[in-house]
Image 1 (tube, rainbow, N blue to C red):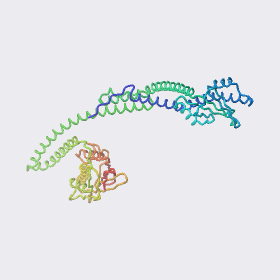
Image 2 (image 1 turned 180 degrees about the vertical axis):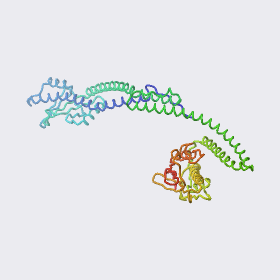
Image 3 (image 1 turned 60 degrees about the horizontal axis):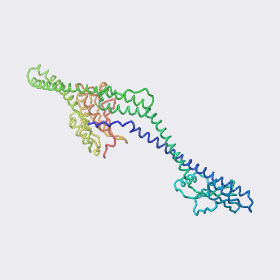
Image 4 (image 1 turned 90 degrees about the horizontal axis):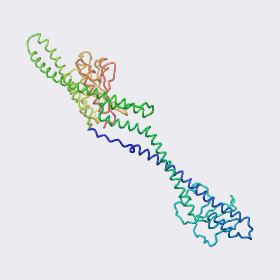
Length: 476
């Protein structure tokens, strides 16, 4: 019993949600990657601005003679402009200190060396400032004139820098979210109309068509698109059309087959009654009756056999093979016995299949195939008595890296050209008069169910059939 169809996802679920999530995640990931250098640049610019005040102080100290000291008011103005607690100027092994009056120097400070310009150091420093918390003292170190002759150090609180970086980070995050939202919405609208909506349409059509494949109104109407979705819609429409036609034909054939089976069953009963009457007629002593009775009996036997074959074919089940260990040599011998070859007074049977060959197959189904092929060969000889000297039927075995082959061949009259054209077609592939052509059709289905092939090999004399199975069926 077919499973119940799943409900279609809503417009904001399924592929839609996955698409929006992926777009937002990609944009935010890109924003984080871009954010780290940006916040590092912000920190560097902020520190460089404060360091410039220290450099100005260093130049002022260079202009003032060593015997003089800067007025406290000028010192305070320099320090306040930078927001610094102290400025240290080192040159030629000497240090000069500018500090706010009454301010105690901190014992632990965090160094920000502006001379280190590699990206990794700058990013690590920015993250350290963001995550450390407020209250730390920062020592900004840099060259006074772009060379190593003079060094300027600015001591100040790190809190203003951290607060500025947090505000900057919030702005970046807000901008990234806005960009992500706008981009996601724009892409979602575009992709939804271009891809998701057609896919949902195809999916909904497949779900609906599965429930009623005989409803022609449910066959999808493809759009005039030349891309992959357009091709998928056209192929789906073609497949649904073929399936609709096949199901309708199958229903008609099923109805016709049921009617034929009933007619055939009644015909078989009628023919059986006629056969019983012909058997009674055959016992009469009238010479004319004795001359015509065998022909009548033979004709009735053929008609009954045909009716029985049609009934048997109609009752054929689709039972899959039940593989098991099979002695192939022994199975061929048993099939030859059932086909009436063992001990035949005129036809010699040769079994050249190795004695120790065991395969994994359904013995019953494979035996039916062998019996049919061997019986066909026997009947061909019997229908052409005396036309072939030393008639013989031979089974041989061979194998390659991919497959194993059992060959059944004979040196008889072979198959007529008309039989070769429709050899495996039911009701058309019979090689003898009065045959139904069902035996080879059934045999091919049984071999194909084993994953193999039944092949007729045309040759100048006689008939040859190859039963080809995958090499994996061989056990030892």
